[in-house]
Amino acid sequence: MILPNQVSADKVEKNGWDVLVAGAGPAGSAASICLARLGYRVLMLDEASFPREKVCGDGFLSDAQRSLKRLGAYEAVESEGRVSPRLSMISPSGHKTHLNGAFLTCKRVTADAILAARAVEEGAVFARGRVESLEAGADGVEFVLSNGSGPVRGRVGMIATGARLSLLNGRGIANARRRCDAVGIRCYVQSDHDLDELLVCEDQSVMPGYGWIFPMANGEFNMGVGLFNAKRNGDSNLNRMFDRFITQYEPARLIMEKSRGRTPCRAAMLRCGLSGAEPVAGENLLVLGEALGATYPYTGEGIGTALESGELAARAVHEAFCGKGRQGLALYPRLVRQILVPRHRGWCLCQKYLSSPRMNDLFIRLAKPGSFAQSALEHVCNHSMNPAELLSPLALARAWVRWKKGK
Ligand SMILES: Cc1cc2nc3c(=O)[nH]c(=O)nc-3n(C[C@H](O)[C@H](O)[C@H](O)COP(=O)(O)OP(=O)(O)OC[C@H]3O[C@@H](n4cnc5c(N)ncnc54)[C@H](O)[C@@H]3O)c2cc1C
Image 1 (cartoon, rainbow, N blue to C red):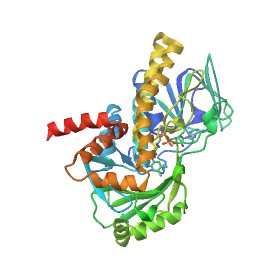
Image 2: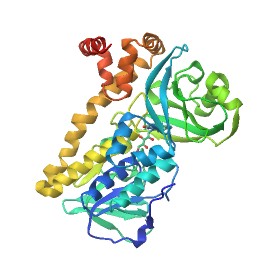
Image 3: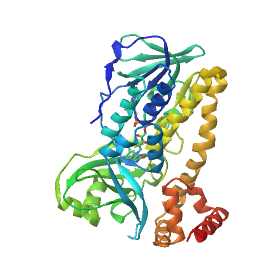
Image 4: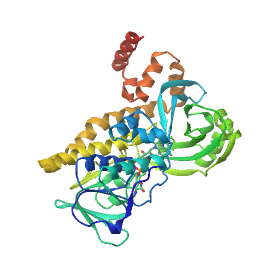
């Protein structure tokens, strides 16, 4: 496994940093890679010692893959992971549709270490340390670390701490105290069962939540269940839901029957629909990834948008350092509005309509192999079509004409 060189936070210089980044998940690492590449002095801090586990489905869909390529990390992640040719969606009444593509899975413990190592390769300094509090003003930012070694100072700060927003509490940011939108649990199962497709299901056994089975490298499966707050009704205990999933849902049962062992289930929160903190949380302070709420509603997919938000934030910081100052940083919320907001609106609509079991059944039934609906779903899944278009008659008509011509 590629390991990043992570030094202790009390060994790093206290002053003279261009950018301080709190959190070395996909968002923090992506921003650090881009800025270190441009020659800026970047200090990336994470409270965890890498490699560290992250509870996730470990699915790197097409937007994440595109970002990994731009960041120079795709090949390393792919060589540690597995690419399956299909993703299938299963509706509450058991209807199933297949989407073709290249669906990469890689354990986050490995992929995040690769990304952090890329940042170090590009010249960032990676330190282990918990950011306890911060100050941000016109002269720059100051991160106070929990090791008591005195604050570190930089020109711009980035908050990429995932679903946890405690660093922003008390800073007058309305959304920072908002509770998370969803919660999920997952475990790894070693099994001799053969399955070469990712399964995402809203089967009866996991109602009112959803379940997934993602094949990983080396005969392992990432299996989990999740639940959006908006759908909390009936029995919403995730451990019981998971037990029902692995005993009642046929493909999960088959995997468990041939299991050679499994890890305990672990849980984590999701912050979706851009419901986190504002992109600019104070002077010289940007918020990225799940802290921004960049994870998509309905799918819970957030690695791609976390990476992309890091890239966008880096672009704005570069503009600011190239002489545009505050105006440069103001590019970041503009990019978030132009690029991320429309996609999130699309996924919010999907959540609204497709989380109704009847609508979901109808939609999956329509998406038969070779059908227009299946092709449209493939485009949505590949992020080449905004999901909102599935619900717009005009956009659907245009897509239908394109599909007809392509046949
Ligand atoms: C159950 C589950 C399944 C999921 N499945 C998928 C999936 O299959 N595909 C997908 O695309 N997305 C998935 N997601 C969403 C995805 O995991 C997140 O969107 C993604 O991890 C967000 O990246 P991030 O960099 O913003 O935050 P994170 O990956 O959470 O990284 C934040 C980092 O900040 C560090 N940190 C936190 N506080 C501090 C502090 N005060 N000081 C220093 N460091 C700190 C943490 O240690 C951590 O390393 C899933 C999420 C869950 C919960």
